[in-house]
Amino acid sequence: MGILAGRFAPSPTGPLHMGSLLAATASYLDARARGGQWLLRIDDIDTYRCIPGATEQILQTLEAHGLWWDGSVQYQSENLAEYQAALDLLAQRNDIFYCNCSRRSLAAKGAYPGKCRGNQQPLEDAAIRIRVAAAIVEFTDLLQGQQIERLAESVGDFIIRRRDGLIAYQLATAIDDGNPRISHVVRGSDLLGNTARQLYLMQQLNLATPVYAHIPTLNGADGRKLSKQNHAPAVADDQALENLLTAFGYLGLHPPTQSPHWDITSLLDWGCEHWSLEQLQGQTSVCVD
Ligand SMILES: [Zn+2]
Image 1 (cartoon, rainbow, N blue to C red):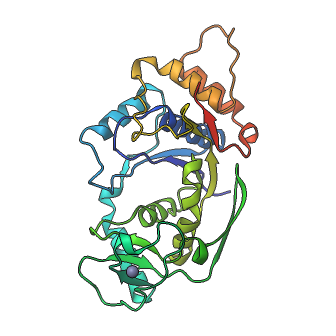
Image 2: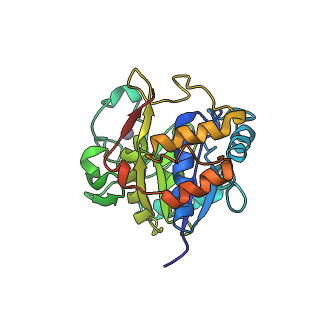
């Protein structure tokens, strides 16, 4: 068995809310239960969405909840050379092209029709897309089961560098999760639909592929996922024990309440011992009560 590690990769677009704390807790427990490391990466590639001070706030919240990571924090903003090298490699193989289709000209749903495939030379004000071969991406998610996606039909050639010059989320994530140090990616089921694109990129770039487990997302009473966009409240650092107990409940972990006295450390230890993916099988969301 090689090295095992999980990771948590929040975007510094605001403080952690219960949904993101749930993802952090699940990936932490999963990694620790496997005897692995837990790595922390700040996905700060989308500089327009980053909020000053959010990274510090996220680190503070993780520490307050006893979710200590291994090694130093990785920042996507410090990994730009690696993303550019991947773009260069794909360009050398003629696997990319420049697309200046307006958003309006593309249908909101369905695969990219391949209109700009002939644009091999750099264009002003254009996104870069990867040419998607008629590939079938197949993987088994530890929670959501077997997944089969015909990428050419579902999304077609997709964007790997945005029109504004920023590296697209799919490429940055594929390269960072394709790091051979990472064996398991545990994240919210709202990201399941991105996985085939990321695996495709990992394969094209000869990167290692992790095992995935997409855990249920937390939905509000309106059925929508808790998120910064719909103003999910930040978790309070001074209620860490209560927050962890809440997260445990959503993960199907029910520590005995009559135990002498839980503290964060003993609770997380108990969680590692009792961690199992079984009770979350096939669940894509939980409603917050
Ligand atoms: Zn185009």
